[in-house]
Length: 101
Image (tube, rainbow, N blue to C red; front, side, top):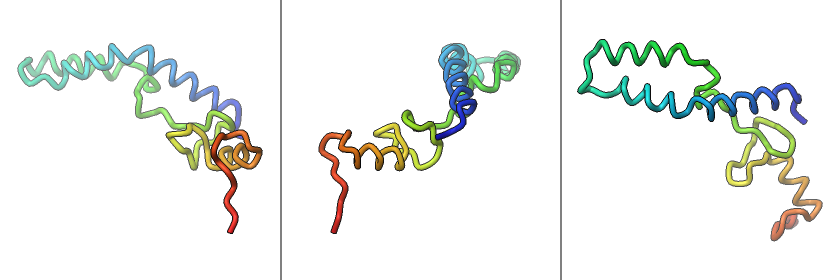
């Protein structure tokens, strides 16, 4: 089980990303627009830099929904390999059985 503070921090980051997504996208579009003057593009970059760091989507990290584990994460299932194995062994995932040969 991951530390609860780390899971809470990730939830807080996700909220910030959602809050600033539209503003960030607008400023990025202005900064990349070649038809605008260099001064306008630079101002957009400065405003983008003033936004909170944790509002950037690249600062998010995938975590298991069951245990909060950050590593060995399956995107399709949104859980770690360990949580997946535990649930499969308990028979809580339909169609999945533990293999033996």
